[in-house]
Amino acid sequence: MPSLVFRGTVVLPSELLPDAVVVVENERIVAVGRARDVKLPGDAPIIDAKDGYISPGFVDIHTHGGAGSDYMDGTPEAVRIANRVHARHGTTTIFPTTTTGTPAQLAAMLDAVEEVARNWTINTSPTRERGNVNDGARIAGVHWYGPYFAPDKIGAHPKGFERNPDPAEYVPALARGIIKSATCAAELPGAVEFCRAAKAAGCLVTCGHSNASWPEMSAVYEAGMRHVDHFWNAMSSTDSIRKRLATPQRGSMAEFVLYHAEMSTEVIADGFHHAPEMLQFAYRMKGPMRLCLVSDCSRALDTPPGIYRIGHHQTGEPFENNGAVGVLPGSDILASSIFPLEHMVRVMMRDTDAGLAHVIRMASLTPAERTGFDKDRGSLEPGKLADIVILSRDLHAQRTFIHGAEFEH
Image (cartoon, rainbow, N blue to C red):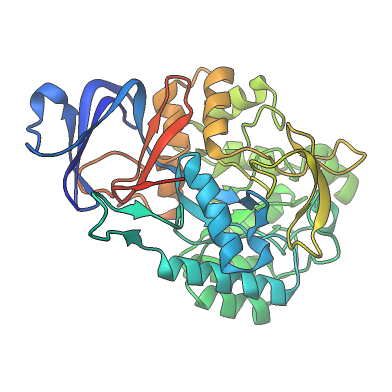
């Protein structure tokens, strides 16, 4: 593909670089710097961000779907529909995320994701001046999130499908190589063995939907666990552990994450899961290198208010999209977000003092680092893939480029 130049304020991992350029050749970034210091290709078209920003593409490590589709629907078309809608909102790298379901549903989900990932291409037909991306965000891997949830921490996910980790299920699943992040409640029988297997398979090993105590967290930490899903949501507290294990009162997942510097976590900064002080606290306690922004988005993204399902379209748990957040019908139990990662960026900017460079880092480079994909994505640096989003001044995604090719919607 021919060269391409982006001009405007460039968002770097720790600072903003005004009046700068990003030069792209053959899907990769070849130069980043002040416009006055970079020699530009003479015939390259220039994309001007004007009063907006040139940002790295967002990396979403925890998302369930969008535009009416859930990854657990288990079809390539459902995967493509979800990937396209997230690309429209600036996500360039995505980790389709499982929930609770039958073994057959989980296997179908992996099959569908593998097919889309294998066939993802850039359209470079001679009739096009530049390539374009047809299938949306690029799949880095699957987040194996359900089904290994604690029975008392299922939340809004499909009930009756949660189970203890079984090697007969997870060993062949991990062997496929598509799973890159793997969750298990730490207190479940077999959790330590699962974490060891996931670590050996090269996954980011996580704990979520868990009522685990500090000693139980310590056991899976020794086995390779280094991340906790959606901080404060569907996770243990000192009070919930006291009710489960009686006295003496034990440390919870929150204390464990805050105590261990190597532990990372994530927040759903949609404005409904956490008040501003909670987002500020998480940022100050873990910092931009250990806190990720995630969408945890359901199939209700970009859909009208109504009743939808988390998980498979036939057996998933019904929830209500009320136009602001997902909730279980007739209750205040949260049921994932209905917004993409770009929305989380805007809320994090509004509700914390992190600043734009750190907020974008938490939506791009930090999740790429935690999952091991930072060598070629997550930031605007020479040698990395040209995954670039043009953001407006108010941080709405205007144009999305993946591998230097524009996603057109």
